[in-house]
Image (cartoon, rainbow, N blue to C red):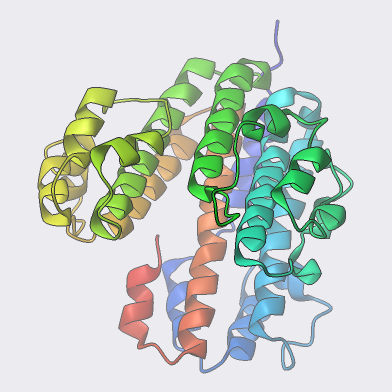
Amino acid sequence: MQKKYNATVAKIMAVYGKRLTQQDYTEMMNRQSVADVADYLKKNTYYSRLLASIDTNTIHRGMLENLLRRSVFETYMRITGFEHISKQQFYNYKIIQTEIDEILRCIRCINAGSDKLIQDVPVYINHLTSFDLLELAKINSFSDLLEFIRKTPYYVVLKNISPNEDGKVDVTRCETLLRNYYINMLKETADSGGGDAEQFNRFLEAEIDLINVINSYRLTAYFGESEEEIEKDMLTFYGRITAERHREIYSAPNAEEFIRRFSKTYYGRQMIRNGYDISNIEQSVRRLRHKYARSVLRRSGSAPLSVYAFFFLLETEVQNIISIIEGIRYGVESNMIASLVIT
């Protein structure tokens, strides 16, 4: 009988219980500087351990952001090490996610003709990745990138991509292919996680539906892409919104009609019922994804779903802090900052 990892689920709930509250966010939004926010986190929240050895008077935005992102990975290592669940293939998904993100960052830098910033490389994960992230950051051409990843699964995914006449690589197409690979890996390995794979896949399909909605909305609203071009960049997995229904939505001639069509879907109705501003569709999607993750974490005893939902919520919390410190740094009014915080 497959182990269910109940202790890991209990551990996750204990850590989740220490999460930041609305009052914490309000207190941080009322601070005057990044250093003040860091000081609040150090003295009043569970981030005190992360910042224990840091002089918050001298901390800058980039350093704090890097520390926060590193804290997510360190929590991931503690959770997956608790019952040695990292031995199961599914629970390495965050390593794969990081590898994909770094490959895409490399492609964007190649397209821009800019050097990768070594200091931005998450070297703390380097001992677990299938390739050296520091060496990846030195690559300056797509052909060199393909050669670098030849012995990884990512080579098969990207090998048929070619630069255009200007030497640019279609990074959106690369991202779509890599994200499809990632999702397929999650679906295929969820049953190795010691939980209800069907329940996990239902949650994942809702995630994919909402990601497809946002991607297609951006392509419609900001780039005026055709239905054919949008379809090429869709993730090829579907949940409550079928492929046909997706096409009906993103064939809309403009952003207003897109939102009108989307509002009639299951997710659109949920947003309206929850009082979200559906005209701000990107923020509403973020709020709905957060609501789903919070709901399944509270109700599910499935280890794969609990781990996946918990880290989605933790990453949202870190993004909330980053939104606050960026808002303070640029003098954004607190009510505008508050609109970006997802709780």
